[in-house]
Image (tube, rainbow, N blue to C red; front, side, top):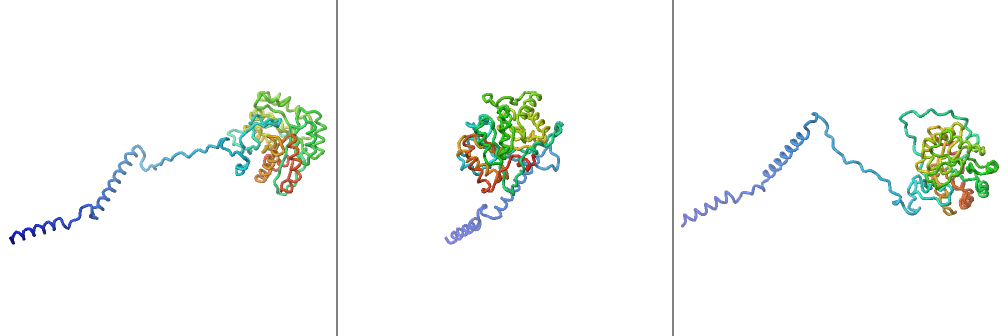
Length: 379
């Protein structure tokens, strides 16, 4: 009995020696370290193998180019995404045109929405791959001879107000001429008694321009007689332009009446700019089309020019015109100058009559458009 008991005790001791004090392999630190080293080594080997396989056919030492996802393309918001009221629109730059809309009141008609009440600034000149065509000799600067003396701005923002379509409605044209200026008044080529009307306007201290009819986009609009049209020969364009320029004198240049079609075609505009250069006259682009090439062609021909920034009376009524005049002031305050165009409507005349006298007190200077042309790189 005693001997068996000793044997059992011996077996337990042996079992305790062999198993009782052993940890499982996964709990031993050196085993975990060995497994981690093995996994890292295996990963490194796989990476080297894949790299060698993908690098076949490439020269040794060639840099590895990482492919990048294409940059997102910015798409301007459509007119439907624009704010519906003026208050929500205050944060946007004024040089961004709002959604085009028809003009129910102006005889320009804005070509059923081909232009907006706030126009974009002219783009910078595009470098030409080949030298431009030989330009005609430049004539004496008649526009400077007929321009009003430049105003002393004292560093204040400048505003030029152009009223065109003048001469047809004599009563309203006389009311415009009686406004405090200096304004820039542009008379229709086919109006009557232009010598007397323009002389009276100049006597009131205003600057003169010729409002030249040009072909609109829509055939439903009649721009008037002797209109400049796409497809006319250079001789015919010059003949019609010469007729318009012969109707009165003392003007600094021309701006376009309608013309969304004609001003979008460079061929006809080159004929116009060559004649203006020869005569020493300036050009103001009314921007009745967002596709107008007037500024670009004038720049190419060395013709002094300006572009319209804001239309005053796309809609009739004093309230609307006053709101547009607020935009004119904001544009001038931001960029140093603004060119606005209006027409001889009752609401426009009334709004200007109340706006002009307080302009200086608000920190602005009313100038003829020639002053802005003089002080810009385009002059």
